[in-house]
Image 1: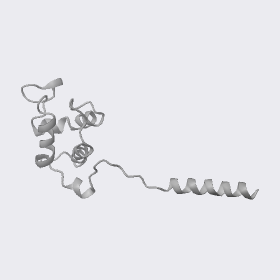
Image 2: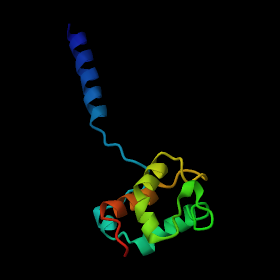
Image 3: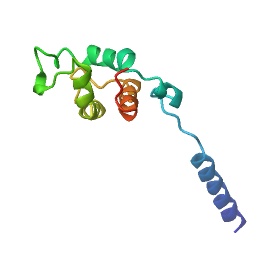
Length: 114
């Protein structure tokens, strides 16, 4: 009976020790302070230029979407974010988490033209 009790105590201790560990994500995340600093001109426009404009511009608006102006980026921001989150855009591959989070922050701040 004593051996069974010790075995139960050992297994319980192991379970408690492993369930209390903190896991961390390797992805880049933005702090609240960074999110406040998101700007269309310095953060969002460069993301669009580097990843979207080659297919979504005034001359070649793939799927009828032109992302070369602030007004259109603001108009399509949520659908662009969804496409980035699910990995369907850009075609070259999923963008880094931090890049997607910048767009998410900008949307949550009201898509300001700043």
